Amino acid sequence: MLNINHDTQLAAVDLGSNSFRLEIGRVVDGQILRVDYLKEAVRQGGDLDEDRNLKPQAFERGLKCLARFGERLKDFPVEHVRAVATQTLREATNSEDFIRQAQKVLGYPIEIISGVEEARLIYQGVSRMLPQSDEKRLVVDIGGRSTEFILGQHFRATVTESLRLGSVGWSQKYFADGQFSERNFERAEIAAESIIDMIANRYVGKAEVAYGASGTVGAVADVLAGAGFAADRIERAQLEWLKQTLIKAKSPDRLNMEGLKDDRRAVIGGGLAVLTAVFDTLKIDTLMVANGALRHGVLYDMLNPEDVTEDLRTASIARLCKQFGVEMEHANNVSKMALYFYDAMLACDTQKPLLHWAALCHEIGWAISHTDCNKHGAYILDNTELMGFAQSELHTISLLVLGHQGKLRKLDADFDNQDLVCQLMALRLAVIFCHSRRMPSLKHLQLERHKQQFILALSTQWANQHPQTHYLLEEECLLWQKLGWQLEIRHT
View (tube, rainbow, N blue to C red):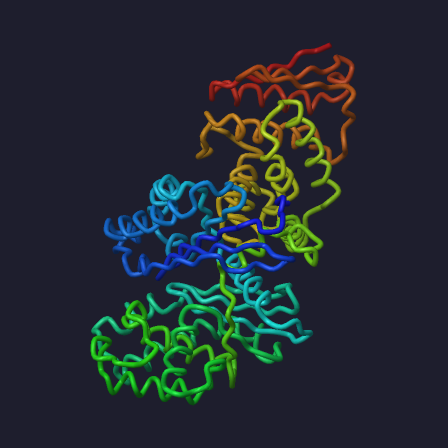
């Protein structure tokens, strides 16, 4: 938890597909009051090439924007700033290159968060800015390249989905000719409905009130308010009126509507098509306009609110293990052994939770096949969105699960990273010692680390009583030698 005092300032940076945003808030009596807000239309979502690489101009615009944000954030403690990137950087092939440079100019770490985590944070932001109520809520946020759907009550999200459709992507695909035509809208709406329909049964009729947040919803609400409609809600009939207005204008450059900002002009067609599909597929009559957004959720998430009673990441791993039928007694034994070995190595404490979670789910691949279960488990983790995790954390857990057994040389890992090596060593040793699916006694073994050498001391009597474990350990020694690390067994 952060050490939050009265008047502590927190900052959230949102690297969205259409805009980058910086929100700075001051903590007052458990609430966050705005101190500053910066927004720039970077439009990275429209600048992916055929190989899904960010184009050079998108790199440059993004880095220049973050450099300006970094100047505003100068001297902020690192723990008081959280920067998150969303769909465009989830998709971009060269996102790692951009993030590496972006962190330097911003001066703070940047996480590429999953769609599910984005949805959770959006709900945090929206729910914090709504009146307290027992109502069951549906929240929809149409961004540049993704749309998030959340069911929740109070401050807790219960169902989350993130789909790859948004105002930028749909405008590029279905309005590429620059024309607002009946045909283009029809194609865009049908395509969006076909995607939303895959998740519709989880949302239709499950909420008492529907809310729209940020992005396209905010842009459409501003235009409707400028035309004299109510500012706090969007009705289905109003979307039809807006569509006909766009068709009459024929193209974005001929639009002249009060409330329509310049950075929304080129993407309003795609956003409106997606919003119309949301109304029709989820059977929404009225969408209330919410003030909260992803950046507000990021700020409140840093407070560790008292109403959240469980660690989201632990809860996510527990649900994953249950889903794939993991034998939890054995998984917990492996975790205990792995953490015992890791502590003996005097390695980095901040990496212990990732090792613990990897140990708990190292056998999730068994649900597919016992053969190559490590590969199946890693695939599941690489393709499952878990609440609370940054993509970098999930990648580390996936790598550990992949490397918990089998050959090490084929592992695409940095074996110069001592923390990662210690995690792998600890987990592999734990799996070996627990191979009989019983918790071994710890009094007969001791592990020491000296730079790139690990010394495992075993009593001769114990080794004689456990020939299979001893054989597996000898095989393990040979595997590490090929990587320039040494695992030595000494008998006492």
